[in-house]
Structure formats: C-alpha cells, structure tokens
Image (cartoon, rainbow, N blue to C red; front, side, top):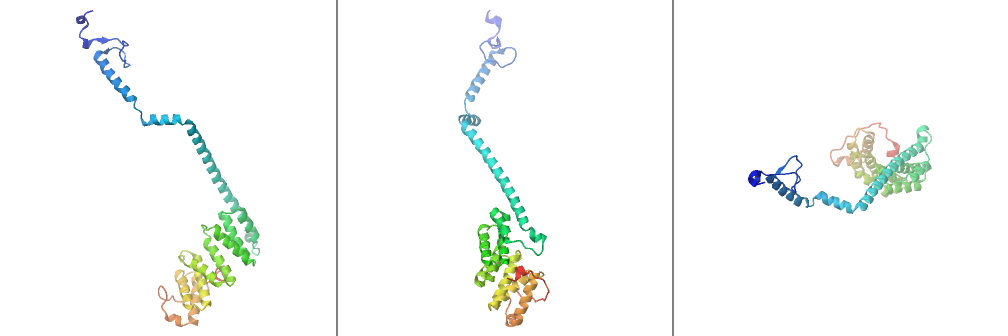
Length: 289
C-alpha cells in the first residue's frame, strides 16, 4: 500500500501492541502520542530509580529485622515490669496504711489504753521507706518517750530524720527530738533544733510557732530576757487570735512585769503588742516538755 493511500505519516495509526507503549485505553495510539508517551516513560523510569526516605527506611528495617524484633520484645518486657512495679508499690502502700491503722486501733477504741511502741515498730520494720512506715516510726519514737525510754526514743527520732527527709512530718520529728533533748537537760542542743524550726515562716507552719514559744521559755530561763521578749512578740503578732498566741501574750506580760525595763526598749519588727489575758487552752504535748 502506498503512502498516499494510507494518508500522511502523522495521521497514521498504529495497532495496539505493535511494539509501542500502551496507555491502557482501548483503541489505537497515533505516532505523535506514542512518541510523547515514550518520552514520559523514560523520564518516569529515570526518576523511579532515585531512592526516597521511606525506601531507605524500609531497606534499613529489612536489614535489621532481628534487632528490631528483640527491641520490641525488650520494650514490652520493660513496660510489663514497670506496670507490675507500680501495682506492687500501690498495694504495699495500702497494706502499710492498713497495718498502721490496726496498730493505732487501741488508742481509738480505748481512751485509757495507749498503743505500745512495739506495735508501731513492727509496722515501721515491715514497711520501710513508705509513708505509713515513716509515720509509724515517728509514733514509735513518741510512744517510747511516753514510756520513759528516752534513749530509744532518740534513736528512732534520728532514724526518721535520716530515712524520711522528704516527709511532710519532718518538722514534727525535729520538734520531737528537740523536746527529748530538753527533757534530758541538753538545752543548747535543744535550742539549736528549735532555732532550725523557728527560721521557717511562722505564719504557715504551726510547728515553727511552738518552737518559737519554746525558745522564748528557754531564753527566759537562761536570763536572756530581750531574746525571750522578741520570741514572744513574734508568736503573738503572727497568730493573735489562737491559743498559742494567747499563751505568748501571757508569757510576754509576765516577763514585762518582772522586768519593766524591757517595756521601754523598742520592740522588734514594730510596736509592742498589747498583752491580753486569756484563758486559752494550750496543748501540753506541744507547749510543755
């Protein structure tokens, strides 16, 4: 067949599958379309050979299947271990709190029967480094002091201060040890510990208030009247409407009556608070050694 009969070459059609790329459409491709498609295919083939990040990641994972598998197993075991530890610690805290409540039950059920120190010590030794165990240790020290074992009480107070520095009961332990030293006649050591508590913000910490009141009593007993007056005034000014503030005002009034020359000296931090006589009841466990 001649070219004139078949038409111009640019209009010549090529049967599908005749050695040219197919584009998936039904029918025939013109020569122009086949040539254009071939150029695109060559371009796509050249760009497809360039690696991308996910291809590289897949290849990296393929070469490290075993390591990745062991890593996933390790993470799973670690997660299970942490979960079990958290569960065990929570259960241990519950058991410690329950044991402490059982040890303190005699004091709750019988007014004239105080728990023995041995019951608290058993809880503290069974559940060390727990909040309930630390509380039991502090109660054991107090019980030993009430039973007359001052040396044993001092050992337990000092143990609490070593092992439970982050406990919210830490100031109470310092106060208990200072009271114990005061009972033993070791006034200087007791005052040092009271001073460490008095440095705290008295408006926010009731233990610091009582410590300042104790410092006033001890200073007055040692003849340091100006220092005693300063402590009384600070307590009375910090909590004027409380029982501790009332006791501080009574102590200040008695001091000024005994030493009237102190009334002429300027008060520390402001004018002298007016002493007010009250019948406020003060807890003997906190104000008298």
